[in-house]
Length: 438
Image (tube, rainbow, N blue to C red; front, side, top):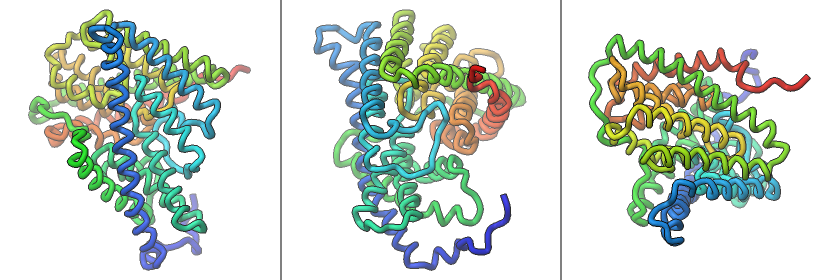
């Protein structure tokens, strides 16, 4: 990289232009429809999951979903994803095995394929999250609105408005415009004085969107989407032993996360050539791991299925009802289902990694010197940074959002675990992808 060009626009010069004021207004404008779409997208996912995994088995005469139920259901989801990838425009969204990605604009013609693949993935139980599809849907919707308002909108403005739309959608999921700012900023690799100028329209869109999101909670009565885990066990001042555990957990998360991503890339090399067949087979395998876990334990297949952000609070609150063996089996089954889902489905990589890290931290907290809250926090942060393909600041912030009541006591431990996991995963990265045949 060389120094800034003499012809490059200066941040303060951009702030003084009428065009930038218009861009801020447009950012605030797109925040409203993007937040509404994001809200009902998440509600549709919740209702779809409830129907296919709770209501439908009862309608068919079962007292509850049998242990084998996830196998055909996730396979149907794989079939629907495969149909979308083959016949709808675009690629159905980003490849989640690559980590969290931003950048570029989303064409309106690609939006149906993105929504189709995301809903089939999330509703039918594949182990991925909603953040990546929401980013793309928000960006594509914002670009569509900008072009409808003014067809000759400059391409640079289109890029910024698309980023603002994605920013607003992510912020509604995280219930924090600032958390969305961290995620977008770090994933985009932005820096320098121009960063604030570029982020301002998105921050405004996210703030307006968060207001709309809260308002819809009151109007619809659907309830509030929240990531914060209530009733987290109190954690005292960090000890030397806990810092030692931070190093251990960081190393373990790097190995486990890299293995999951390696599995995803290994399967993906085959799935990309036979999309229809492999998405169905992937669904069968994911459902099989969920059925195996449900058959061996009494905890239910939903612990293995889905992204994990809704199951994480009960996991922590009911930690005393889990044995070490059940937690280790959960980590194993969820990790394998996650790797398979990354290879063939479409969704976000964030929340399943957080759930696996928390479950692993819970299992380790049965050992000496590691309190439950510290184990959960360090495991969550460490697995998040590995599965996002980096983004250490975001990994720390998301972890502290989940465990907000103990954030002050956790922050130093989470930072150590995240940095150790990040650096170790970077050292393991040459092993991440399978070698191409000679």
